[in-house]
Amino acid sequence: MKLTIALSKGRIFEETLPLLAAAGIQPAEDPESSRKLVIDTNHEHVKLVIVRASDVPTYVQYGAADLGIAGRDVLIEHGGDGLYQPLDLNIARCKMMVAVSNDFDYEAAVKHGARLKIATKYPQIAREHFARKGVHVDIIKLYGSMELAPLVGLADAIVDLVSTGNTLKANNLQAVEHILDISSRLVVNQAALKLKYSTIQPVLDAFASAVPA
Ligand code: PRT
Ligand code: MG
Image (cartoon, rainbow, N blue to C red; front, top):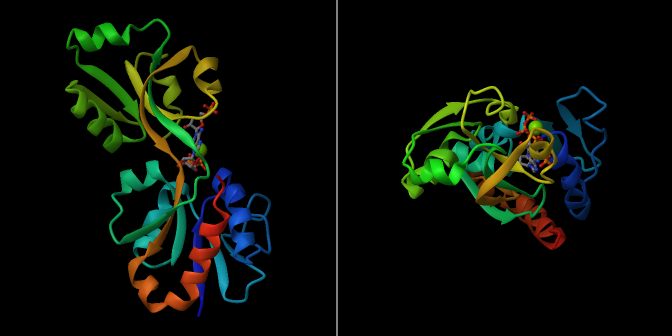
């Protein structure tokens, strides 16, 4: 039975290679150098489709891919409809943080009940975080380079992913709150899991046994 796995290029693809190898799957090409969006593997029944990180849940939800790998950030924003999430793969780890410019007094602004402008690619996560804290916010949706927003007066703070912290530092920003630990998860189309159980279950088992500590 044919199996399609949706992956994004970059860090998720690289960190997924050892998991695929554990399941006996080796991509025939490197998506970084090839322009192909459908990549064959050594496994005659398995192919990879290369999509934007934030599109992975959509491909799997509609069954265009049977399996996919997506960050917890992306899955929360997507909502997870129609997706079975059996496994935290512990790859592409980072933290969802609130960050502000070094000269912005975040504590004072929060204490005084100021209404904050928050720039983010993650409106769902940001809205929930500030609602829990009882802080009033206006969310400004961006698609990238959130770090710029406080520097040019678009926002008071950003909600973004941080891994080394180098991007914040290079832009005179600092993290002031930790919202969530993020890693990538395996997602499976619920109908495919039933229909292709005998093909999918061994892949799930191999991935589970190869998850990095
Ligand atoms: O790049 P594109 O717009 O196509 O999509 P994407 O940014 O969603 O994809 P990609 O491949 O960059 O990220 C895929 C997944 O990797 C995300 O959904 C996260 O779950 C995870 N991940 C892990 C990260 C990071 N670490 C990370 N550091 N995603 C993004 N970053 C960015 C962050 O947004 C910030 O701009 O890297 C910058 C900070 O890095 P440091 O090391 O300077 O702190
Ligand atoms: Mg990116």
